[in-house]
Image (cartoon, rainbow, N blue to C red; front, side, top):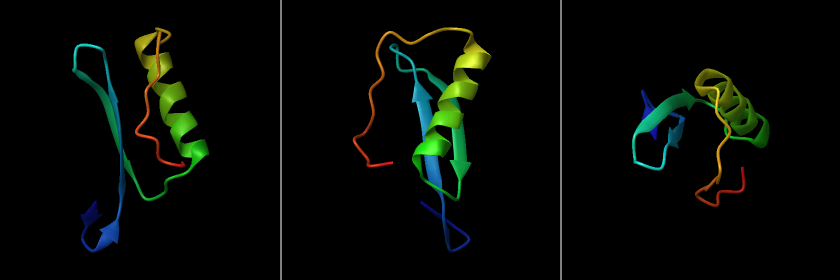
Length: 59
């Protein structure tokens, strides 16, 4: 997605009912960024997911 001409990446966590748990918009897309986002989300919700599904991007 582009904002003011700059490419930004949208990270979104959705639960099994389709409710959005958290959204993060940032300029980089890498494995470390995904892990930080996921770790922060797990601390915030204090739960461990049963299944993790991704969109199959290489990041």
